[in-house]
Length: 268
Image 1: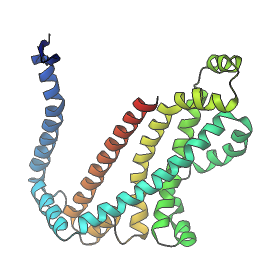
Image 2: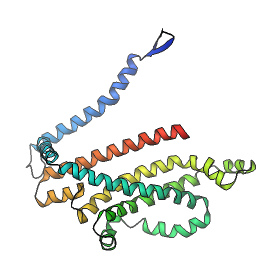
Image 3: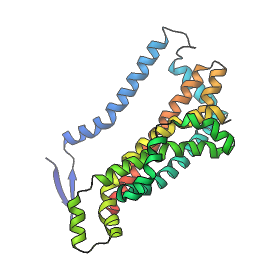
Image 4: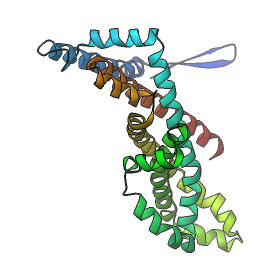
């Protein structure tokens, strides 16, 4: 039950106690789970050496140290830019490619052999060639992330196109819709959930790729930070880099979900 009051011609709803508890639990349970994980981590660290498992306090101290000297922010910024640029390029090209491959048989026949061949080759296999062909600069890392993104987005978009009910297309044709109108009014809206899913999966793979690329050919970035920490036997730095990657991925995913949800509610 919710209490309704009318003040000044406006109706206000007061949340019931059960609704308030559910809202509180929605935020409290994840916080409790995180604190419990940190507690278990702390207990486990007391039974081993800091080289094997540093304590949360040691990792926090290392994070503060790196934040004060600017190395942590620089590493996060470099990796974030590379991930976003390569991922965005893969989505921008992968979506139309998937739409046309799913809609037009000739495009599918032409592109499918390349998609099916290259999607099974991991980006790390091309790191050396990418450095030779593109140089050790930013374009190399972005190109590798683009490579790992485009196939996932394309395949998910193709699956979305193939899932469209043929009866809807037949109904549109009977009303005189052109092929382009079918694409924009039926196929594209029906495929959006598949595109969003493909983009989210590709974003996760982008984080895997950026670490590999930065270990091989980068002076700055979270992957480079983790590798440098390994060379200096600073396990606490490794933990800082890993936690930063997880937090960055969480932020990227939440921003993407927020933007897509608002956009879909507005246009679809």
